[in-house]
Length: 129
Image (cartoon, rainbow, N blue to C red; front, top):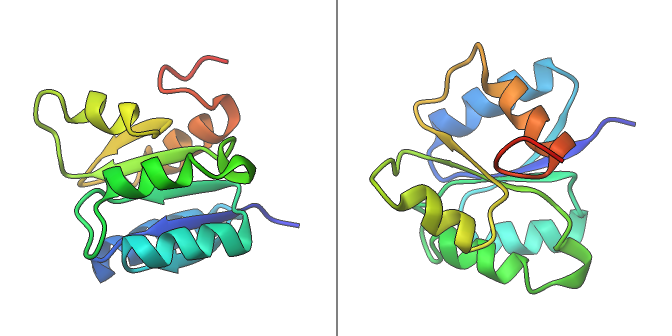
């Protein structure tokens, strides 16, 4: 059985690119276009990892990460922020909200899958277990 990842992303082109790259590398992908739906999908499907945009309708990614971490059966699931927020302090803020890792947009198709896989395997921002 393949590992299922949840992508919470409201931009169709970004979602398509991430899905394409991850499916090409053996992952099964489910998606949500807003934060509330992302939480529902995570609770329903229990994915191996969650790729989370920060700028989302209804609930931003910070709120989603915080909410996901309150669910005991999801607290071990890596949350990888995939975001264009690249200002000083943004990485720290999203990690403090509960994200495991941080990948800047635009994603690099040559390294994206390796970055995601490292976070799934190691479960920490520094890539070490």
